[in-house]
Amino acid sequence: MSHSTPPPDLAPVSIEKMAAGGDGIGHLPDGRVVFVNGGLPGETVQARIVMSKRDFARAVVADVLEASPHRVAPPCPQVANGCGGCGWQHISPEAQLTWKIDIVADALRRTAKLPDAVVRAGGAVGPWAYRSGMRLAVAADGRVGLRAGASHRIVTLDACPVALPDLAALLPELRVEGADEVSLRVGIASGEATAFAHADRAQLTGLPAHVGIGPAAVLHETVAGRSLQVSAASFFQSGPEAAELLVAAVRHACGDALGSVSRGSPLLDAYGGCGLFASALGVPAAVIVESSPSACADARVNAPEAAVVESLFERWAATPAHLVVADPARAGLGRSAVEVLSATGAARVVLVSCDPVSLARDTMLLAEHGYRHDGSTVLDLFPHTPHVEVVTVFDR
Ligand SMILES: C[S@@+](CC[C@H](N)C(=O)[O-])C[C@H]1O[C@@H](n2cnc3c(N)ncnc32)[C@H](O)[C@@H]1O
Image 1 (cartoon, rainbow, N blue to C red):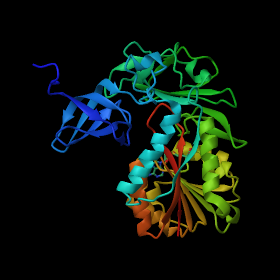
Image 2 (cartoon, rainbow, N blue to C red; image 1 turned 30 degrees about the vertical axis):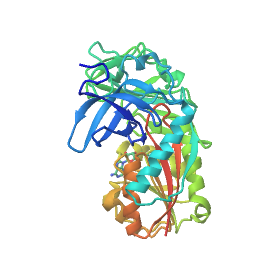
Image 3 (tube, helix red, strand yellow; image 1 turned 60 degrees about the vertical axis):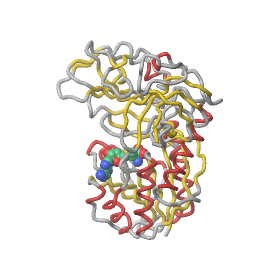
């Protein structure tokens, strides 16, 4: 074989843009689209094909032929061990937010058919030591870590540079028996901590005495000057800095509508979790709809002025609302939830999305109910990962 002919599973690929999910997109010499894990826009790479379908292929970077100026050596040594926690450590932090904005604009252009949608940069948390909570996998020897990318192998961790120091300090001594996963969280404002194994009869050892153990253990975090109770089994944002940025972006997106919220025209905090928005926005009246019993219990403490309804949002019998903030899980709202949301009669909907494709799908569904996309703000609450967070205003 000549040196100039690459083996059949290797192909040179120019990376054109980033895909949702964080792979670079290019074309194979035969014209098929290829998603290249580790490839950056503007680069030419030697791609190793790992999956080949009729219409597209998946590949990994075997060699970088022309590097992007935004390519950096991953600072964390666990990346070389295969840790799947951070998929974007090979990208400079400044470029990460830019490419997240491009991913969102592309999803709105292609899926929602909005070529001129306004998509702007919001804030970003500091690139290191930002996480106050992590869901970890348990290895056979009881140590905790994260799964390797696209694998069940567990990379055990004694340190983690994206974890806040109080959280990272819990990793080396913790041993877990009888569970495959454990969630750890620290309260930065309170110094409290919780640990929650995802199994009934798990044993956790090696944690300091102040760590509350079990799904009902609580800690407190302060966001926008409000102290929030967060149970171990409830959702919380990636850390307090992320929660502050998100609340500020949602406040800005609500705009003047926030000032007209009243008892007769409340804020609807849909998928409200522990009541972060209803509490931190400081509204006089709110309805929180949330499916997790644990989060509802927290919300009743955190937002005493709100009515908390424990329900799947798509099954909730809508009541009138002046303004809606909706923060669904990755799948987005979907058709049924958009119908419920529209039935509230709210003139403004602020949608918090953590997946660009479900944002684009929800944008189309909201348009069917007369809600016009009025600008998206992209935040980086998970540096070194391709995870996006988008706050979008819809008006009708
Ligand atoms: C992304 S979190 C947002 C929580 C909260 N807004 C916050 O920022 O902390 C989504 C929340 O929706 C809840 N949830 C998931 N599916 C739901 C559904 N179908 N109906 C109502 N709540 C749901 C989850 O329990 C979780 O608390």
